[in-house]
Amino acid sequence: MSASIRKLETNTIAPQPAALGTVVVLARAPTEYRRHVHKAGMALLRNVVPPLVVVTILLGIWQIACSHAGATLPPPSQVWVDAHDLIASPFFNNGPQDIGLGWRVLVSLERVAIGFGLAAIVGVLLGALVGQSIWIMRGLDPIFQILRTVPPLAWLPLSLAGFQNSNPSAIFVIFITSIWPVIINTAVGVRNIPDDYRNIARVLRLNPLEFFFHIMVPAAAPYIFTGLRIGIGLSWLAIVAAEMLTGGVGIGFFIWDAWNSSHLSDIIVALAYIGITGFFLDKLVGLLGSIITRGTAKG
Image 1 (spheres, rainbow, N blue to C red):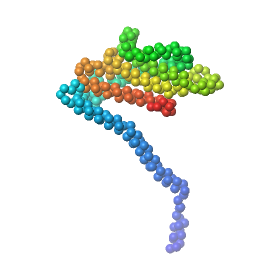
Image 2: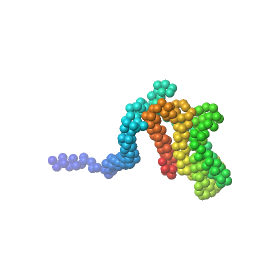
Image 3: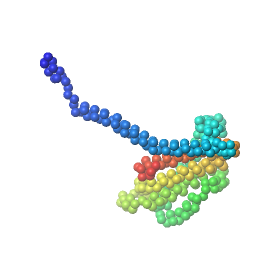
């Protein structure tokens, strides 16, 4: 019997330190996972729940205020009944003009992408040039300040006369409306580049193109993205206003057509689409700026 016990003890393998370490790591993994899940849940509570509560309260107030017989605006319940198809099916397509609001938003976004893209490129280049010379800034800044205060629709008659076409006219209105904050913020960012950076460029004998890409743009990026965030908001505002007069299938013309047909519920739903789209455009540019500048330009 004792011989059997000794044989069993001889064949028993003691646990190795490496195996113990593996057990500890495996035991730690669920804890790390739970901590990440808890952190994500708390972030969701902080960022999503408060707006939902406020929206629910506002909808309740709206429902109560507009439910009586003499109300001039429909309550949320009536909006849902009247515009259910627009809400539930944003991408239906029953013909050239009978399409969902999702398609109309995409048409407007296409124009914004072209107009704002041109404004971003030209604005950054022109802003960099203005920021490099104090004399150019003194000469052009008053002109920029005057032109940036012109309302978007005030440019529309001139653009229609010049282009003789509604689509390029709308794109021009977007361009001329959104370029000013990009120019001004880029110029300010370039003016605030530390002298040490400029001295390094001289020591390294960087040519103007190298200085622009390796020194100027990275140093002024937080200012540039501030201008871009302002510009994208103005672009979205401008296209909605311009489409009301130029026609087409964009979201702006849909609102004007719904007004002429006295479809107030459709207008309210379209306004919600416009606001949500503008919100995501702003967050998208802010997120892009935060990634590129590594958090310097807050999203």
